[in-house]
Image (tube, rainbow, N blue to C red; front, side, top):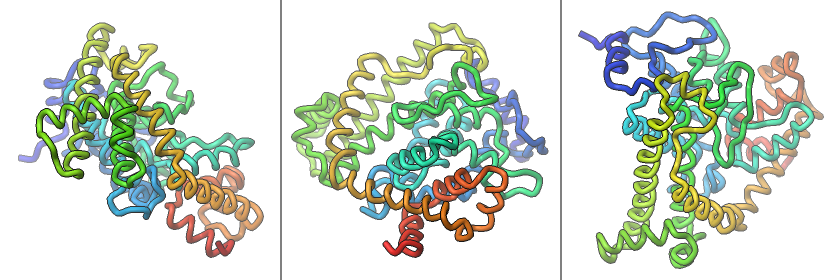
Length: 381
């Protein structure tokens, strides 16, 4: 006999912590639908995210290095997959809902613009007089309105808990603020896992990509970044001298393993100390319960500061992204001056949202390579 949804929900109640977000207790969807027979509501959401066009476009969007720079460097899609894997691991360790944590992680960057954070800054500046642009809000806009796949509604019609995790996605990069309908102080613990998994992954794997690209030096990192020096010493003690590629891989793995151990132990202690019993108790907490220890937070801040100075600001990273951001601004100005050149779907949307927002939706959905191709086609360079 197939495993029915009711059996899956029963397993959750039997195995997850009381403060986990149970799929059988979802606040539901904007548009009522018949429940899937062999999937929980969050499993359905996960599948809808993976099958969306916005998810597929992440393959050709910048993480740190402009898309196409190197075959082994991470894209926005590979970053997303890594965050989702980490979210499942953390949720499993803390007896939380893995499906919800994974779905939030898979969807967290759907609204990201082309050209990474440079593209986001450019669009936010251009939209300053029209509500701004912030990719977490755009992720919510995509799943609530912009994806068109179903006959009965716009968007993906995801559950409230997944949408809560998107609009409350918060890291050192991401500060989306409050949004109507999502005014609780904190998201679910699964949403908090999505926040921390993102930060954990981009710090560690941006470091990995910087080493792989030859823009960061192991010798300089050993002198200036304690987490790197500690991990290198551990790897040498346990494995001796290794080939360069293997050594770097194990250093990054060691850094991630130490972070995961710290997060699980610190978060478990914080959850128990808070006295929360339900998912809504969690939402009333003023501070995230899924967190690093103060000592680990300090070490991560040191790594992050080093990456800003030596990787994100490196000419080989910053200059191509600056040029790409200029292309994005020129495309925005072109479509403002030539609205007939934009697609029919955007023209139709403009009648509801106004031209600036319709253009912003169109540009933010572009992949790096499509934006470059459109700039070449329309503006000749």
